[in-house]
Length: 488
Image (cartoon, rainbow, N blue to C red; front, side, top):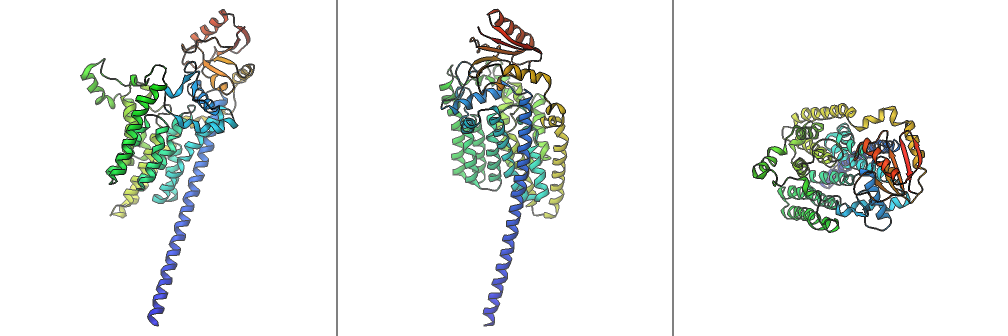
């Protein structure tokens, strides 16, 4: 009887300990979720405010917000995506393979506005904060998770994306964040499930899917990894060689000419380009430095960082200099990989046998990461929110708004690049001065005083206005350099 009583008592104690452990784990999970959602909410508000303010100030452009709005507008009306900005009824699936943008169409039907795209982008980018923060909370606690979550959310790659219109890669950022978190915790099937939709975001991301598959195969799940890698490579090949050319008016994938093939420089030049040329000029080295610096270079201690290689490889192999640096949206997909590798490295350090040494490495890394985040903020678009100009549109913006309101809905308009996204939700719009937009529009609106300078400069803008005037277009309004013409 005594033995039975002892056994029952031990069982009760064990049950009590297990209950306390579960309670502690539940509380920890709740804290992690609360922190992750709080930081994501903060970032969502930040991104939305910056995007909306830039659009109100007419700092967004036809290339690219206007193009994507025309695509979503097409989907919303039950058509395949076309863009007058690329040419008359230009099929956008013949430019890039991004059918994922169709998911915005139901929301656009309810709120047909460029703000729909900008708010959607803000939500998707902020969503990526959640898995990285929750993971970091399990690894380094609440304070460390705050450093990781804010470090990612305020990173330069995300900032440049928010500060430059809308782009389809905003869908890839949360998918990669969830995929990298799953890889770091060896949830292989979940990682594949999060990775495969990347094939619908953009044609080059199949290479990233292949990198995920390769990682899984090397970690021991050979069959799953190989199948995933093959799916990624096949997806990229299919879209670049078959799908996009099938929709393209010229029957080609137009971006192959961005990568040198040796026809101009010969074999020696081609060899130099794909060896030393991948890390030179110095702007490429700066991009890699900026990618790793927010993680205090600890990301290099995780093999997950190799998932960034395909994106860096095609960018650095390209002859387009815009791909090499830290501007625009091209680095958005690198940020969740870098910060996921950062958390994974911290987890590996903590799991080392000589556990007494890990706090120094972890604390140093987190402090360095936090310092970089703070010091880099003034260098990127988030700093614009500290300026009064962001909150008080000037007199010229008010003038432009009055002039644009004179254009009736449903008309065809040739407009300066910065005026385009102010009209794409209610008119058929082309960019003024581009050769593919030579049809006679019903309306022409131009900024001859302070044009963006791309794709045409001020002198050409003035010349285009003069050309339409010579063709008999009537001046409807002209104020502060904003000129509105109407076809008779």
